[in-house]
Amino acid sequence: MDDYVEYVTARLPALHRLAYVLSGDAHRADDLVQQTITTLYVKWAKVRRAEHLDRYVRSMLVNTFIDERRLAWSRVRLFAAPPERISPEDDRDERTAVRQALARVPRRQQAVLVLRFFYDLPVAEVAEILGVAEGTVKSQTAHGLAALRRLLGEQTVAVLTEER
Amino acid sequence: MADLNEHNARDLFRAGLSAEAPRPPRVDVAAAVRDGRRRRSARRAALVSGIAVAVAVVVAVPAALALTRDESAPPGQDPPAPATGVSRGPQPKRSVAAPPPYAEPPTSCNVHELPSPSSGGEPTLVTAGSPDGKVHFGRLLLPGNEMRVVRWRAGQPATVAVQGSQPKVNAVNNDGDAVGSSIIGDKLAAWLLRDDDEVVLLPGGDNAIANAINGDGVVAGTRGGRPVVWRNTATAPVELPLPAGARSGQGRTMDDFGNVLGSIVVGQQEWPYVWASDGTGRQLPLPAGTSTSPSGDGRPGPSSVVYYARAGWATGLVGMPSAAAKPVLWNLMTNTVEVLAGVDPPAGPVNGMGFVIGGTADGRAVLLAGDQRIVLPAILGPSKERPNSAAALSDDGRTIAGQAWKTDNDSQAVVWNCH
Image (cartoon, rainbow over all chains, first blue to last red):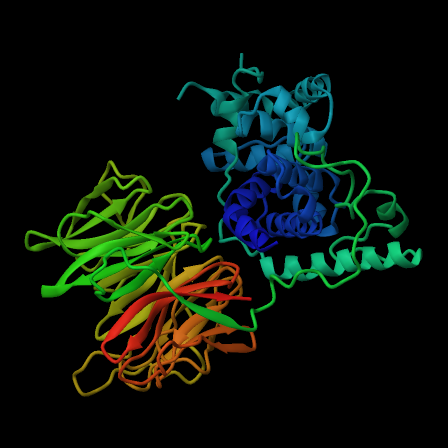
């Protein structure tokens, strides 16, 4: 089992990046990675020779994120006095706006959107990671995009999706 | 009309989200091992006695729920099984014996000579090793002060042709890609030595030393008194910014998070410093009571430098460049520092568990692992004049490589296997 430490040490940066994209918060990203690698330790004897070990571990992390207990402080930070619509004043605010809007759609939709559009993964792979049918990924994508469009408003969407 | 759809959503997510946290991760692999082991033994106890015990360490999962699964579950649902290679069938009967102690420090080590690529019996030594302990690099010292680079793969030696004189490999990653420097013409030159023996002179690498390569293949070093980073082998390196007042700096090491560590020089004083991957920099703390006043006699000092780093740990020395210097271990996650007892400055390489190797004043090589101090066995009785030295430490703390004396005038590259 010496290879656990080796594997985890090598994968930490990539796992933390994924956790940070999903959660948007460095502390929560730390917690997600810590939980994931702790569970991985427990399962290590069984999974270490898995052919798609990276994908499996990524899947553990994403599902931990989806099922994470909604911690009081994360609600406070993201949902305190939520604006009806985020109206950015500069580019930096637009970036914040995407993060805030994303935090207001259901967790599974957040994960679907991040995996499909930030990581550019095909529907089939996202379905495998989440352990759901491909049709579910497609419908969650549609629902998630519709929710974001509503939350962000036309102007922000236009600024962030224009040809660059 | 600005619509958000599957075609332009990627633009929105790339513009609106970032994968780079504003500070380095604070994840503790040793704690994961400790908690995971506790969780596993709690589950075993439950399986053996039939009594449900609380399995949760990180997040509360009802014990009864956990026991209905084939493994202790993460909060919520299990991820789908890996595609192949993992049995989901009946579980093998588990032993109640203690789990393998791989995160525990080893208790003893054996010393073995690494075979020489030459039959002439010339001295060899180790200069770098991969974190997985599988590849080591060193030097073969030929008559007339000639040197060759030696690579040991799983203990098997071969010389590798590198341009220039006095070549030295300073670091190697788990892909087997190594970096180092040699003197070509009348200048230092930095190069990357690929696993397949191809040597790539790093662009803009004149008068540069390549000191480190991380798991992503990013190379760090020092050029003309400035810390530099090569993100690829096609373009000149990027100079890392020095803080106001600093006149020079060194990039001595790098971790897999992309942090470059070394030192900055301000006036006559040198301070330990880290350049984070997001471009920010900070000075590392000094142990309480460290003198920070200039030496006063015109000599430089104090001088504190980071030499090695791995997974949130860093080692080096602090203090005056004299007998008063102290070997230290920094924890980058907590931004704390401790003086290491039982080893002479500077401290040697550190691994992902925070274990450190180093040497003692009477010529012994040692492994410091938490509260444990393991003296690495010598071939010839150690002495101050003929010190054994450890230069590479694997992440699991089981493979250490360096140099040991065989006779009064013959030293050889060795590996210590620990268990």
